[in-house]
Every structure is written in C-alpha cells, then in structure tokens.
Image (cartoon, rainbow, N blue to C red; front, top):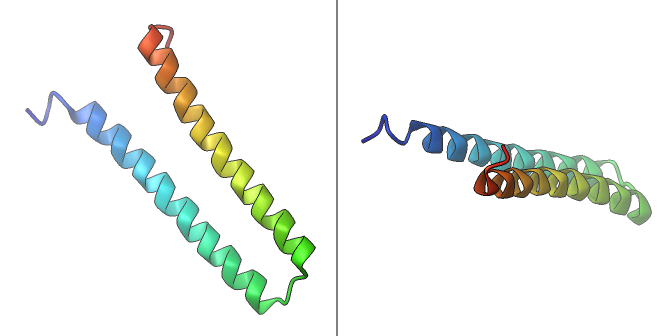
Length: 73
C-alpha cells in the first residue's frame, strides 16, 4: 500500500516543507523588522515582496495541478 502512494506522500511532504519554510521566513522577517525599527512603508514593501513570492509558489502549484489533471504534464 505504501509503495503505491509514495509519489503522493513525497509530493505532500515537499509542499508541507515549503509551507513551513515560508512560515519560518515570515517569523524571522517580523523579528528583524521589529528590532530594526523599520518605518511602516518599508515594512509594507517587505511584506508585499514576501507575499508575492508565496503567491507565486501557490500559483505554480495550482498550474501544475491543472496541467496534470488535463494530461498536459
């Protein structure tokens, strides 16, 4: 049973790993911004860049999922 679903388990594990990495990056950035007394505009830019990077990762995953469902990839 496990050998039949190893690809699915690896895929889910990799995506969960990336979610945890993005979360840890966000916590680290929050700590640096608080300790560095960064102005509000600078904080906004930093969080915008982090959000766009995460949104790009999610979009890539959704595109791959749709292509695999359509038989393209």
